[in-house]
Image (cartoon, rainbow, N blue to C red; front, side, top):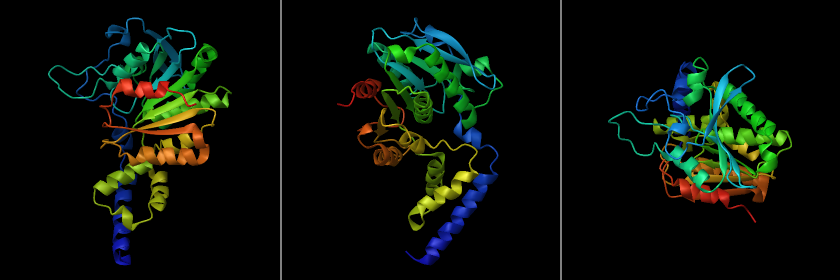
Length: 314
């Protein structure tokens, strides 16, 4: 590989980065709470088959945003209680508009069904700008800073309800929700409460890494350049960073981290999950599990995922 080629690729990178830094709608590229294929407003979970016993709770963040959390109590003593966080698109019920046929939109409710079937309980959080929280607080827009406040409000509520004293806590998130799951566990650990596990499915390492993926698809030869240097250059240009890899690796070893990577994921290539697991293993050792499943970004088997999370180490 010639130095001339590397120079040309770096110039191409700078042009792409300039466009990214000038793009005013980064948030619209990340957060897609109301895709046109979904019915709006969303239905409460209690109106959905199998979830009649789910109750709604209103939480208020430090900046005054009212959020909706839907809660199902565990059936048994010592059964786990899941803190569940959705990804960047749609909502928990995700009902398709009439005539729309898309595969994979029911996977979130399937996760909650499998949690329910196992006897465990859950709180399904509607982050600001999403689902029932968007109906409750329509002016609140999604952002990384806002999500941090939402997660803090949920953690405070869980601890105030003394749920962690009665039930093992599992923080669960898929895709972008992996950040929320790691952040929730981090906040709990800061308050001397250790979730037994953080389970993340189809996570990305960071938004900077995702941006580099896009540049690669646009023709950038990343192998000709120092990718770590590129990531350090991209990160300051982003309005939201969502550094899931760093958040996961920073968790105390008292909490098991399970990174579940779909092998056929074309939205977030499998190397993201592998990179998260490698960094976490280097820092946390045996408190990290890396598991691959034969699926894509959203068509994974919810029963398989919950069975994986129910199997504790040791």
